[in-house]
Length: 114
Image 1 (cartoon, rainbow, N blue to C red):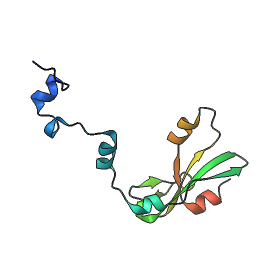
Image 2 (image 1 turned 90 degrees about the vertical axis):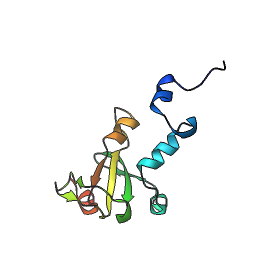
Image 3 (image 1 turned 120 degrees about the horizontal axis):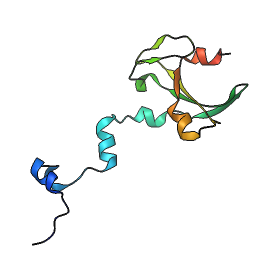
Image 4 (image 1 turned 180 degrees about the horizontal axis):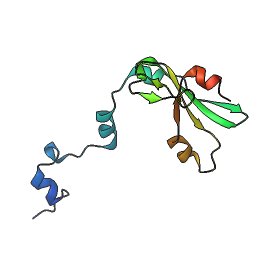
């Protein structure tokens, strides 16, 4: 009898149709809606300040889909509001930790921070 590449658990539960497994790209596409606006957003820029180097990315109103709390003023950034996503460029814990600690700011709050 030929050997099967599918686990017995997948056979019992039905698994994906046709025995095909979804790739990581297909799973990601199912979670997040694709939009041309997201692709056309400006690339992140590095800003130098007294408190270090920061990577700043602009988020267009069409791509702002969740509520965020601005660390500058403490108010909510509502869906559909253009804002900035900011993370530290020169973190001691590394680039990945810095990216995971990113924050969403109102543009005015970011420009007037101390």
